Length: 508
Image (cartoon, rainbow, N blue to C red; front, side):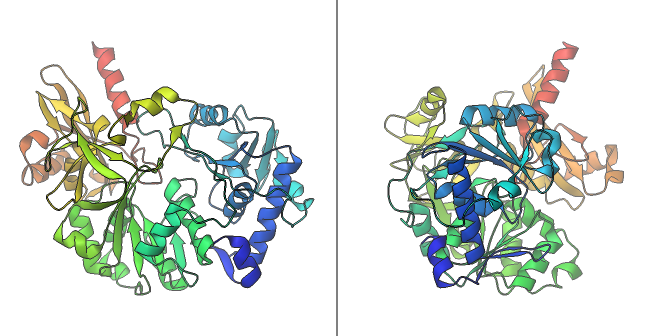
């Protein structure tokens, strides 16, 4: 249950394949690289409990560097490549990272950071950074003498505020000690040594990083895409015979909007399990994906914090459309705004009691704000539990729109508008309105920018009004060439909302 075991048993087996180039790292090569990384961290003075930060594009070295930190007892901080200088600076300072490693392609951001001093670049040069390859080449490929388990310390994507570092105690057991995630993926998704896992998402995000590292625990092969492209994803499923994969709902949407002849061109029959998470999936989208791929689509609901975990199969979902499943980790509690327990079927804030322990690094007040003394912790989402114990999500509490005293959850409106054939992406937010307090606004990224304008806005409003209550429909629609969407599928809605709040303040 650790790559060093598989490096000894199957040294030539591919551990990592870069989908675009075919570059491959065997288990033996990954073992040597991760050992060199561990030796490097020790040579630079890092000891158990210290932090190292990576700001890297998907590349062959990413996972070996993480394994090097894991076997050194370090906290490894994977920083989003999409963050601003200010946001990334905050993470470096908050995490206390003693070493910072960045891709040269990210020099415009990485080169401006108040980095800790031990700054290293890969795949090119960054002013003020030393070449990491030179350092690693000097290190022996054998394990360090004092190996111990480290863990990730990952930061939220900052969709509603400052990124928050999620951490917990370092594991005290041996390197090959199984953890809760390994048990879940083995039981739910049949992770095994013969699997080929296609990863189309950025490795800095919790799910892709943790699932890819779990594949290595089982001795499988990880195929990494540098970035998602809908047709190339299908190409890679066929080319590598992918048995497992994990996506976000926006990837489903983009694949479904490919022309029929393109979608039918590729053989995806090797897929046994395609897991989706990170954001709600529109019901119609999931129905169409199951019809296309068969009952190989699995969903889970969880968070970086790891306090709870729900899961649902295709067969279950077809009986409970829109559900994210039953709790497998933690007990679901639905609370009202005053912290009172709500009965079955009532909508409120979702808490998980008795789940995993976590804390927000260096922020005890924020940690306390999401905890309830009796009912566990919340991710900030709204939902309800039906009579059979299945959880249904409504939206994030922070995104709720109050218009004329009526609560509107924008996810429902987004799920309708995204199905319009002329819509590539959409965000629904509340913006200031003198009469109603807030009004519902849709910000749309059209598939063809030439369509943007009053005619399409009217068409989309009519499309929404035919399908949902008028109070949930947008009163106005604006167009953007690209929405501020994180590669994990989450929208930076606060950036859109802040723009409209600022504009209203200027008019006041």
